[in-house]
Length: 280
Image (cartoon, rainbow, N blue to C red; front, side, top):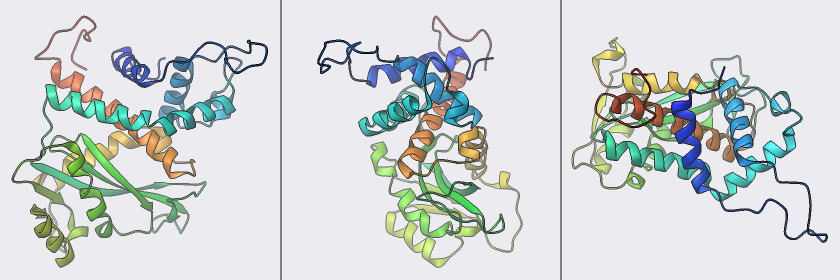
């Protein structure tokens, strides 16, 4: 069974490969002019997809074709080149051109996941008996497409993470004149309203002490995005210790979510050679 269906994995790899630098089969700096052949980038990419989706260790996914150390070293090389972040940005750009990002309706919310290995952004989890946990403050558009995130310890309140999360918006390009930010009751404070007023945003904030279904506002889109992200085993239970590696896996997952949503929405309006036989 493939990690991802071919109609997602293939366009994802084609764009990823276009971002990689051209390399020779052998190391030209080797004194004898020869060396072991470089393991193919596609093989490493498929291994990283398996790690992301299954949440397994690098040792568990390594085999005779590729070692765990090679997977990690190639992963770090691609992080230094900024390939994962550029892939996410290109996926967002393609989605915006074809389907259109709903940037006048923004939703922000935090989610806590386990981080058994601790690491740079981890902290004591208030919902898991003080064990190490990771909080991500995620921002989505009006459909639920992930636009960015901020990582912090699980013991960090959502409200202080709102400003750095919203600061990611200008990087998306021209923004609508009127933007409404949908938030849950955890952001119901004067500090949050002052921040939104300073940024020129409207706030749709749930009131503390007043029960309301999540469907009552457009905040449910970000809740659905949290579910999409938690479907990736590496994000639901994070064993990575470095924030750069965690962000790289989030960028890869967000690119998959964006491409999958784009194919689904374009299926009824566009035709292409390898279009899925039915709407995914």
